[in-house]
Amino acid sequence: MTDSPLSGRLGALRSLMDAKALDAVLVPRGDEHLGEYVPPSAERLSWLTGFTGSAGLAVVLKDKAALFVDGRYTLQAGQQAPKEHYEIRSLTPDGHIAYLREHLGKNRRVGFDPWLHSATAVQALKGELSAAGIEAVALSANPIDAIWNDRPAPPSGAIVPHPLDYAGVSSADKRTRIGRNLAAAGIGATVLTQPDSIAWLLNIRGNDVPNAPLPLSFAILMADGHVALFADERKLSPVTLAHLGADVTVAKPDLFGPTLDKLAKMDKAVRFDPANTPAWVASRLEAAKVKLSPGVDPCQLPKAIKNAAEIEGAREAHRRDGAALVKFFTWLDKQMKEAPPTEIAASDKLAEFRAAQDLCQGPSFDTISGAGEHGAIVHYRAVPESDKQLAPNMMYLLDSGGQYLDATTDVTRTMILGEPTQDQRHHFTLVLKGHIALGSARFPAGTSGGQLDALARAPLWAHGVDYDHGTGHGVGSYLSVHEGPQRIFKNGAAPLEPGMIVSNEPGYYRTGEYGIRIENLVLVKEAELPGAERKMLEFETLTLAPIDRNLIDVAMLTPPERDWINRYHNRVYTTLCDRLEGPECEWLMAAAAPL
Image (cartoon, rainbow, N blue to C red; front, side, top):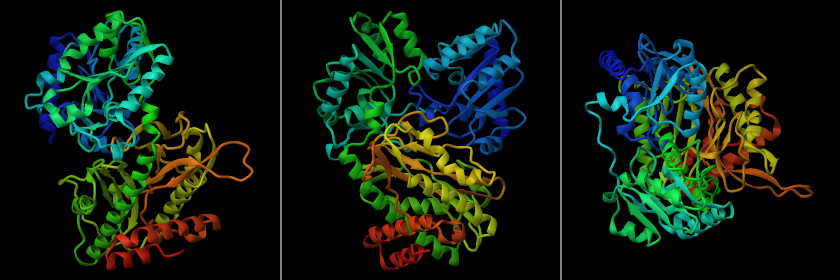
C-alpha cells in the first residue's frame, strides 16, 4: 500500500469530520466483540493507516494524527504508517486521552464508535475529556465505514459443534455450573459479547476470523441455564442446531438490542463485563433501566482452567506439533546447504508440515518468520516487499503455532544459521537463563503472573537489558492463542491456578541486527514437595522442540541450568523420535545431545 491512497483516505475522513462538526475521531483496531482477532471487514485501522498489527489506535485531528501502539509494534508502525501523517506514540490506557487534551481546547468534540470501545474505556474517556471541557460524542455510525468503498463483506463462516471428546465437559454442564454461580450471587442473567466465551460455553466453533475458530456472536445466559444466541441463522446447520438443543434459542443479531431491553423486566440483576463489553451494550442496558451488576465475564476463569480432556489434548497436540517442527528444522538444515529459502518460503514449508499432522486445522496466528534484523521486530510479518532470504551465519527467529481440534500451540525458536558471534551467544544465553528460571519455578498457590515476571527478566536486568513485551500469555483450548485472565507480565494480577496454560517467552532485541525469543507453553499444576507447609504449584512444559545448542554459552550456565537443558532435550528426543523418519531422528539426536 503506497502513501497516495492512505493520504486520500485521511483526507476523506477529515472532510467527513468537518461535515459532522467533529474536531477529532478515534479509530481503534477492533470490532464489536473487542477481541484480538477481527474479520477483514473490521480492519479499519489498517485500511486508514497501513499499520497491520493486532493492537493499536489512531487519533485523527484536523491538522495532525497519532498512531498509538505498544512496544511489540513500535518499529513496525514506524515502517507501515506514513511518517508525514502519523506520529507514533506508546499505547497506554490513557495515552490517547492525554494527546487529545494536549492538542484540543475547550468546547471541542471527539467522535468515537461506541461498539468499538469498552464501557470502561468510554467512561474514562468521557470523564477525562469533560474535565478539560472537551465533549466525547458517541457516533451512530462508524465514519470509516462511510468512506470505505470496497469494504469486505461481513464474515459468514459456519458454526459447528466442538466434539465432547475434545471439550471434555458438555455444554449443559457448563451452563448449569455458570448459572448456579450467577444465582448464588443474586444475578439472573449475564450478557456475553466475547466469542471465545460463547464458543467455550456452548461447545461450538466457527470460522469468522483468521487463525482462531471463533463464531462471531452475542449471547445472554440465564441463571437457569437457558441461552439466547444471537447469530446469523445461515451459519447454523441442522446438526449444529441439534447440538445446541432445546435450551439454546437462536435469534437474529438485530434482535440483540430489543432483547437487552426486555431484561429490565427481571427482578434480579444482570451481569456484564464493563472491561470487555462494548459501550453501546452498556448504554442500551442503562437506557432500558436494567438492574446491572458489573463484573468479570463468568466464563473467563473456568475457560482458562483446562479440564482433564483438554490437558491431555494439549499434551498430545504438542507431541504432533513437535514432530512437525523437527521435520521443518531437518528440512531447513538441508536447504541452507543447497538453496536457502526466504522468510515466506520457510514459513510456508512449516505450515505444510503442520497441516500434515492429525487434527490440525491451520495456524493459530500469522507466523513470525524473521531473518537477521527482521527478528528484532517483535511481531514482524513477512510480506513480498520485505521477504528476506536466509543466509549463512544469520540469526533466524521463528514464532509459530497451530490450531488443533484438541489444543492450540504457540512456540518460538531462535536459530543461528551457521556460526554465532560471542555477542549473540551471550544474549541468547541470558534469555535462556530467564526462560529456565521461570520454567522451573515453584510458587505458593495464589501467586500471580506479575509476581513471577521478574524471574525471567532478572538475568537480562543484571546486564542492563530488558524486553518490551509480556513474558507470558494464557492460551485457549482450540480457541484464541491469547486468553485471560492469566498472564505473566509486570502488572499481571490474576493468580495462576492448576489447569491454566501460559507461555514462557523472554526475549532480547537489538534493532537493526537480530532478535532472540525462546517460547514454550507450560501447564500450571500442583507441585509435590515433601514437607511443604502450604499448597505449592509448578509448571509442566508442554512444548517439545530443541533449543539451539550452538547459541548456548555453556560457561554462563549453572549446573542446575545445564541439567535442565539436558533433561528437556532428552525428553524431546525420547518423545518425538518414534514419530519421525530416520534422517529426522538423526538430526534430532544431534540437536538434543547433552551439553
